[in-house]
Length: 156
Image (cartoon, rainbow, N blue to C red; front, side, top):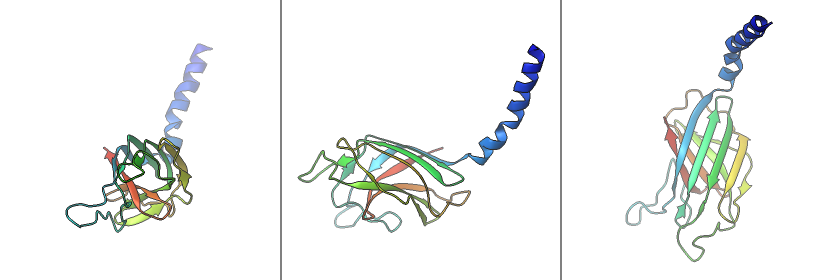
């Protein structure tokens, strides 16, 4: 009986990578960078044609996983204003994820509210589905209006 159980477990182990490959990772991000509206002097900090938010933003933690089928899971903690009169608040903002591959944007269709402490979670599918491989990936967390508040740090 133990041999049969071992044989079944071995067989399952051999075939289990097939579904895993179908759901494999396209790109991952661990850590985040808050947006600073200006690069130097009056130069605006535009990333791939996306303007920054009007005030500085900070983020405590960002983790994102993008699958080859376009599913994206993002957890952000502490996305808050880092300047202006609303410093330390969420600015009553809603955000979505935008993955840029080779200069082409792939967005989540819906926005999510930032919690009072700046936390958010996104579980969606990017549209259009990003190419595999994703050339020069950039992950931006953008406002409902399309300005970027945070960027992900790609995990090798």
